[in-house]
Length: 181
Image (cartoon, rainbow, N blue to C red; front, top):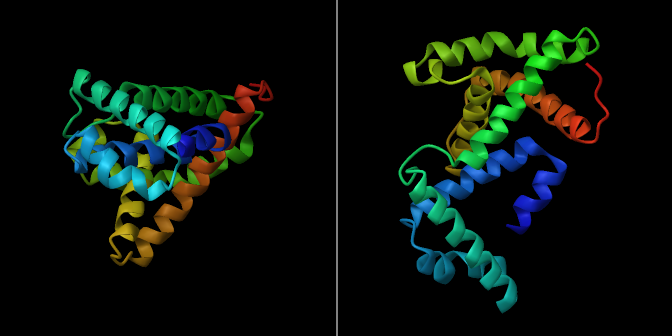
């Protein structure tokens, strides 16, 4: 909760990846808030008040996951809404002649996005922006597991990360009213 609030202010892409990780963490604890409170929250070394507040946050996310039927896979609607906002902004930026550097970053990443989309039917059913986040999240999981990353994957992720980073920067500027289309 505390991390997510900071990330949401500073980098919407990092926030979204973090929230996906939170969803997976909740799943790893079988959507059991008591186990999360006992075994996970203490790692944050918070005082009892903040620990209870964090427990409440996890409990509310668990309830949402149950209500939205994403206990085993998928993402909460609050996270999907961010993808929708980012996709809308992406399309506006591409249509605008005022953002050639953004378009250039997108077209550099596009061959890698197309390759990702060609690898599975599931990827084809999602939008390009979500495919990019799937790739970034997948790399994060590989690194957490200590698994090697091929040079080709590293190159693809580098282009995708630059593109998504730029989109995230534009999102922040757009929220501040600083983007013209």
